[in-house]
Each structure stands twice: as C-alpha cells, then as structure tokens.
Length: 111
Image (tube, rainbow, N blue to C red):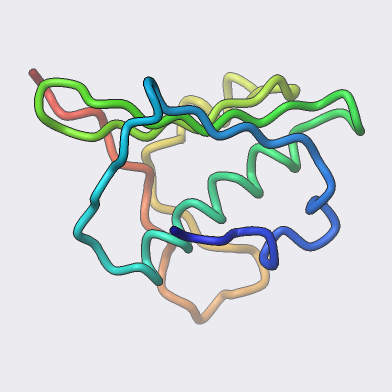
C-alpha cells in the first residue's frame, strides 16, 4: 500500500477516488519509491488543474491483456493544443537550467 497523502500538501483535503473492479488485489513488483513518485506526480498534476472544491481526481486500476493498467483522470481545465503537441518531448524546468532534461511521458506502445 502506498500512502500519498503526506505528499499532497495544500491539496490533501481534495476529493480523490481510487477504484478497482471487484476489489481486485494488485500485487505489483516495482520500486516502491519510484512508483510512489510517479503516482504523486500524476495526482498533483491532476489536482493542480482542478477548479477549487468542485474538482475530482480518479485513480483507477484494472487488468487488461495480462497487464495492470493505471489511469489518473480529473475534471480539470485540460491542456492547450500547444501543450498536447509537445507532451511526449523531454523538457527542462525553467528554474533548473543546469539540471538534466525531465523525461517525456511514455508513448502508448503499439499493439
């Protein structure tokens, strides 16, 4: 079990729902720290896009074709077309000129 609450800061009282079908138990072999950081980043990004207390973040886990799929969604303002055009490109945070570029989001794997 990964607890994200302490990393949510000012957003810890917002509405976040975790769903999995039929209360399925998911055993995942991964680095707990890395998985926690990914979930925290996705959740914070979703929370930052929300409009006050009316916002909703959903985290869903389900099995698909023998794999576990994690989806983080929200009802926030979304991304502009300019951001969507660059979503899979590595980027650097503006305040970290000497830091290595941040990795891009993973592209969906071809099926």
